[in-house]
Structure formats: C-alpha cells, structure tokens
Amino acid sequence: MTAKVELRGVKKRFGPKVVLDGVDLTIAQGESLVVIGGSGTGKSVMIKCVLGILKPDAGQIFVDGKEVTRLSGRARDAMLRKFGMLFQGAALFDSLSVWENVAFGLIQGRGMAKAKARDIAIEKLAKVGLGPEVANLSPSELSGGMQKRVGLARAIAADPEIIFFDEPTTGLDPIMADVINDLIIATVKDVGATTLSITHDMVSARKIAGRIAMLYRGKIIWEGPTAQIDTSGNAYVDQFIHGRAEGPIKMEVRR
Amino acid sequence: MNVFAAIGRVFLAFLGETGRLCIFMADAVSAVLRPPIYWSLIFKQMMRIGYFSLPVVGLTAFFTGGVLALQIAIGTDRYNAGAYVPQIVAIGITRELGPVIAGLMVAGRVAAAIAAEIGTMRVTEQIDALTTLATNPIKYLVVPRLIAAVISMPILVAIADSIGVFGGFAVATQKLDFTGAIYLKNTIDFITHQDVSSGLIKAAVFGFIIALMGCYNGFHSRGGAQGVGAATTDAVVSASILILAANYVLTSVLFSK
Image (cartoon, rainbow over all chains, first blue to last red; front, side, top):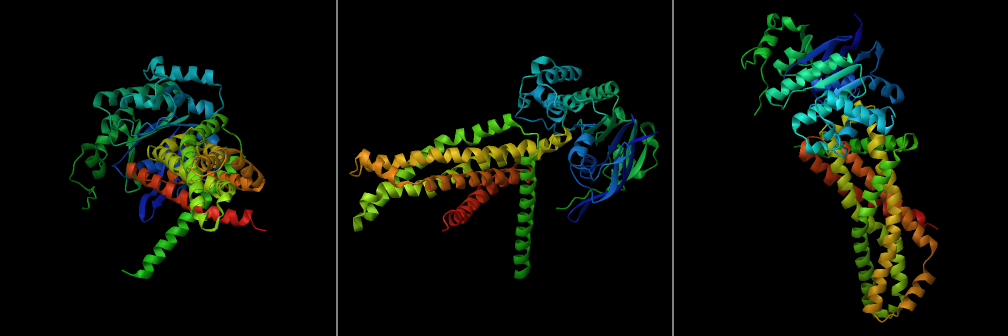
C-alpha cells in the first residue's frame, strides 16, 4: 500500500490558538478517507496546509512521496494540478458563467483551448446531473444544491488524482445531501481518485468513507475502517457519532 | 492601563502592517514581470477603472476649473492681476488639481470596488479556489488591476486636464470679461510640456497606489460582511492619504532644480 498523501507531525497555530497539534495521517492510493470532528477543530486548516494555502509551522506533508511543504512557483502549480477541491460554500467565481467556472482549471491552469474546455465542462456538468442549459447561467442564479454540484463538476473537471471535499453536505436538505453523497461516490469511482473529505455529518461520513479518522484538539485521536466506527471503544468517538452533549468532549462555551 | 504599552502596541501594529504591505507589493510587482499576462482581464479592468470613471472625473474637473477661475478673478482684484486667470488655471489644473482630484475620485470609486470585490472573494474562499485550480491569485487578480490602473489614470488625467481648463474657460468667458480667443492664446502660450507631463507621471503613481491599496485590503479582509466593509473603508482612506503624501514627494522631486 503506497501512501498518496501523508502528514507527519503537522502543527499550525494562529497567534496563541493552537489549531493543529501534530497531525499524523496517511491516505493510501485510491482510498476514500473521511475526517470527522467538531466545528473549529482544524479540519479545514488541515486541508489548506496540504494544498499550501496555509503554511504549517512544523511537520512535513508528502504527496506521492515528495515533500510539498516548501514548494513554490512552477513546482507548486504542478503539485496542485493533481488536486481537485470542493469547497464548503462551493466558492464559485461569481464573475464567470457556470461553464467557465467548471473549465477554469483547464483554461487557466493548463492552457486548454476554450472550445474544447467548454465541451469538457458540459460533459462534467452532465456527470453531476446538470444539463447544458445551465452552462451559460451565472452561479448566483443557481440554488445552493446546484452550486454544490457545479463545484463538484469543477473539482473533477481536470480528472484529478486526489479530491478534497470540505463539508460537502453542510447547508443542504437531507435529500440533496444524499444526492451529493451519491454523486461523490459515483464520480470518485469514475475518475478513480483518492479522496479526503472532512465533515461533521455522520450520515454522509458513513456513506462515502472507506476509512474514518477523528480529529480532536488538533490531533487524530482515532482511525479505522468505517465498519468499526460503532465499536471503536473510544469515548470521544462514541460521543461524537451519537451527537451527545454529555461526554468527554466539553464544548467550549464562553459567554 | 499602561500608556506606554498602548503606544507600543499601536506602533508595532503599524510596523507589521507596513511590512505586510511591502511584501504584498513586492509579490505583485514581481508577478507583473513574469508570464502569463492576462490581456483580456487587463482590458476589462481598464474599462472599469478608466472608462467608467470618466463621468465622475470629468464633472469634478469641470467644476474645479470653473471655481479656480472665479476665485483667481475675485482674489486678484486686490492688485489688478485678473489678467492672469488663464495661466493660473492652466498651471493649477495640469500640475496639481487634475491629477489629485482625479486620483481622489478614482480612489473613492475604484479602490472601494476592488477591495469589496476581492474581499468578498477572500471570505467566500474564491481566492483559495483559484489556488487549488493552479492559478496564482496575485497574477490573476492583482496584476491586471495594477497594470490597468497605471495605464488608465494618465489617460483619465489628460482628459480631466482638458475639461478642467475648459471649465476655467467657460467661467472666464461667460462671467468674467475674457474673450475666448485671448483666453486660449494665453493658455497655450504659457503652458509647458513639463506642466502636463509632471501631472501625468503623478497620475500613473496614483493609479498604482489606488489599485495596490484596493487589492491589499481586499486580500487581507477577514470575517464576513463586516470584514469586507472594513477593508473597503481602509482601502479608500489609505489610498487617499497615500495619494496626498505621494503628491508632495513627487512635486518636490519633479520640480527640484
């Protein structure tokens, strides 16, 4: 089993607030890993460190066995071309039309001709269940669920080797959330990508994960196959997956 | 509360901010020099920064030229220098008022718009999304705005200069006792290349300041709608102050003999 992405002792703090306190995590080739954890436990920060949007204070990150923490310029662009990412709020460019959003990585990142990129964009939109009639709309004309689908189409447009999903079902109704889950499973199978999702939606996690890891206070406190999540024997995991207010995890409520 | 601690904190915050701005500027300028260059984005920004600022800048220039002529005529009544209205209007508009007033108006219009747009892109993760699509946000967002502003502002100021002088001409011929031909002849005979070119150099620098402060504040906005609002205000205020400060420095450099 070769590691596609590996984090070793990654630390990140903002001022006095320690967000990541030595994260060790390995994602194997072709695996679908879901990281669960409460709001504000540093799940997004972890993903942004891998992508180089944030620089970790300490630790190393490897992609395909190559250290990427200190890459810059062309080497970093080449590394980023392996990735696709679906953002929590979809993060579509509102100055561009739907198809230009989907084709953005192809045109700007890879210098593909516009006409060809548009064909691919329409093909990818069809994969997420959107017809060619939405291609010329502006993202603001779409509903939240449709924006998420466009975001998904953009993430898979360039057939990435690794896809990150940041809270793919947050803010959607349960049915649309399930539609997105199905799309994620279908597209990942289709593209054959390695995926890392972060979520606090357990229904979604159980559905899309091959393996689950839990992040708490900046550390991975448990990881194992999805089937073992109910018998983890870890009090923190049990409290989280059953959504109990009482337990070892104390919500920091300061008023 | 310790007074020295408070002063020290403000001073350190100021130094930190200055440092961040300098790093941002260095990143942006070095990105200008390296490909790819997004020509269509530069053109789009020139339309937004230059062309759509024309009405605002033209109107302010017209009234400024007019009021300048009026004030000079009234003020110089005391020692019979009223004949110098065309010369003073021409030199005042081309050297100072044209670039500065256009700079301040464009700062209000464009620095605010840039900061709001980029700030919204920041808080909705669109800038992070650019990075994940292997596109450098500095190159894609900042560089086209910088180039467009540096090219547009001198053109805008050249037009503002003409309209400003025309404002003076309109007041002088309609309200004061100038004939059109004499006013124009006095203006043309008096004005030098340096008067106009110094104003255009200032305009290019002001354009750089406007785009830089808009982009910088947008890029560093934090925390939702309120953060974007603060970034917009900061962009306009800092751009305006820097324009006035740079104007003094540029005047002393350009006219040092």
